[in-house]
Length: 431
Image 1 (cartoon, rainbow, N blue to C red):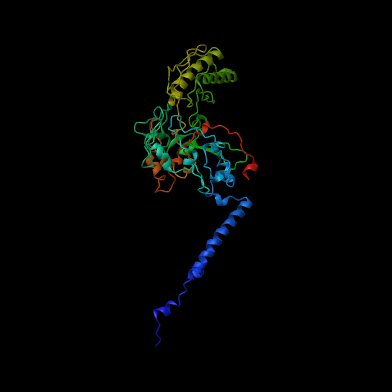
Image 2: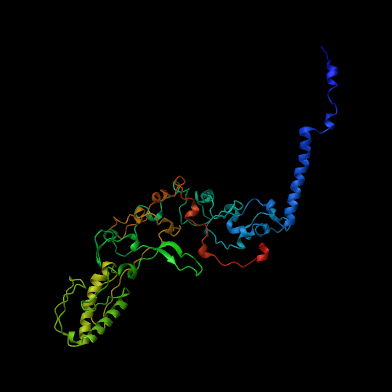
């Protein structure tokens, strides 16, 4: 049996091991030299090639991708040597975007880059997080005067107040008499018999004429205004005389009067033998407005004057007031020379119910109108048929999938007050 002492065993240990690199120590030494050197060579090669990718914090938004490799376009500073290290200032943003202020009485506004964060990929930087909005609107303060909007607004839907247009007690300010329930009946009497109107028969998304190179029309998102000629005249022609096929124009009373007189004069000129004939009972005008018995007219002028008074009696007291509220005395013409004209209240039909919010009907056309607008049971003009917040939240909520952040309906800047900017770059500056 071989016996080794501790001294003999110690002699096997290299007391100068720290002077020789072996194993992991050798690789650690090699990598600590090679990796930084390779990184330096890579950065140098990209710099020679003109690429600034190593210095970038990430891809910029799709709107700013054209200047992604020109850091100094946005990172401007008085110090020319700062380059990409300079923070983006509002001045750099306003070079291309003449963004109007949010409100005249707002507290000091944050810098553009505070809310519109770049280098987050090919995203729309206008789609900001709700936290930036709620930071101010959660407890809104102004420099002077009272704010015109709610002072405490949180995220939608739980922290958002009910829409002002549908709050309890709200009424439609329109003065046009209209009954939705009647017009949505199954057996509505139309010009060709019984029919059933759909909402789309009168309400269509507003479409604007797009440019000649555009493949799709431009839409505002609002419903196009309902007009008498396009939506009402088919079922409600403004006939005014039993003998005349022509309908009165839907216009101011003075224009209507001139058209009626002209039509009567033209008719009697073509049928002079009817001056002394009695009237026939046609159903072209309401039968509850019979003409009073009169002796035969002695001339075409007298015939026109008489019928003009009777026709205006039908128009002013029956036809027009069916939809329009009289603002003054509605009287027929006293004479052909000095006839009084009626006055009607302005219709005051609201074109945009939520002026502080943006809404586009186009993406919502897959659902029926009555899903959001309770028109089938509406019998009063004063009924507000807008959907409440809960209806919108059935789709637009974090748990439902549809976008529900503030920017979906609200815009920070009022772009109607923008102004053209002065061009500051040439194409070569952005290459």
